[in-house]
Amino acid sequence: MEAHDRRWRLSGRAGLWGRRAVAALAAAELGAAVLIAPVAAHSKTGERPPVRTPVVAAPLPAAPSLVDPAPAPTTTTTAAPAVATGVGQLTLSVVDPTRQTVDQGQVISPTRSLPTLVLYPAVGPHGAADVVGAQAAPGRHPLIVFAHGYAVTALTYEHLLHAWAAAGFVVAAPAFPLQTAGGPLDEADLVNEPGDISAVITAVLVQSAAANGVLGGRVDPARIAVAGHSDGAVAALASAFGTQDRRIGPVISMSGAGRPGIPHADPRHPLLIVQGDSDDIDPQQNSFAVYNEAVAPRIYLDLIGGGHLPPVADDTPWRPIVESVTIAFLSHYLGGGATIGALAAAGAHPGLSMIGGQP
Image (tube, rainbow, N blue to C red):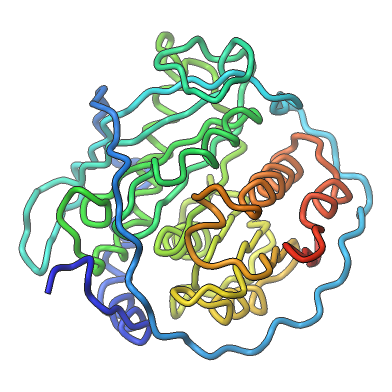
């Protein structure tokens, strides 16, 4: 049976992480050499992930209403633009030469290749299309590294990533060696993705530190968030809470789950959970477990009737809610100025979504 048709059980996920986590996370050295070069654009094809057996977790406690706390301290960094901008696009060929790619127990490459789609705020009016090589908007912008789900591509989430870039964030979305549609698939490789996320952060910061280039001087190394959907959310959570990469701040988990053995109680990582309550692939019990374990700041967005992929990738009533809430969350916790009141308003839509938490 082919990899993308496998039934993948969460009980197996625990064993997978247990076998490989220590070695993989130890290998994710922040200073590892990263090779960068332009590559061709990503494929947009992808399959829906396989069905997974739910893990039973304690129910989500009644989340308090979101209320503005004491005013946040001012920041000395340049905030993200408050209005939509144009969006530029480039693709980096990120190669981590310090780690192998292993497929079904066989080494298929001595390195890990991570072609990375980068969207960024650009000079010009906001529009629906990304402009390849467009001039970056002035200022230093926060960075979001986004991890896609199993057997899809970054472009499966194109609308969401475009919305983030238009709101003033540089978005880096890698293709993974064994999780991306169009290439070999081995879900056991998920254990290596936290290290991949760190490698992509390093690569983008190298681009920003360069004297020339589209991203030269345009990324703020002090304001970095990670986000992911499905398997990508597992990787994003593990990269923040389970590695030594201190560059990572806020985390967005969309239809994800925590990695066994990694605690998620760390106030250095404000957490937003986005979850459809009708998701039968990564059910809400998984997100409940992460939320219950986390400490403030923690926010939970419940998509009423929402499934797994459509609320974040398809033209559904939930997608603009997800876009608005994630932008408000990132803006607030990365110093862009959005209030908790704005975040609460973005997530409160009777019959479609509810939002609560501890800001």
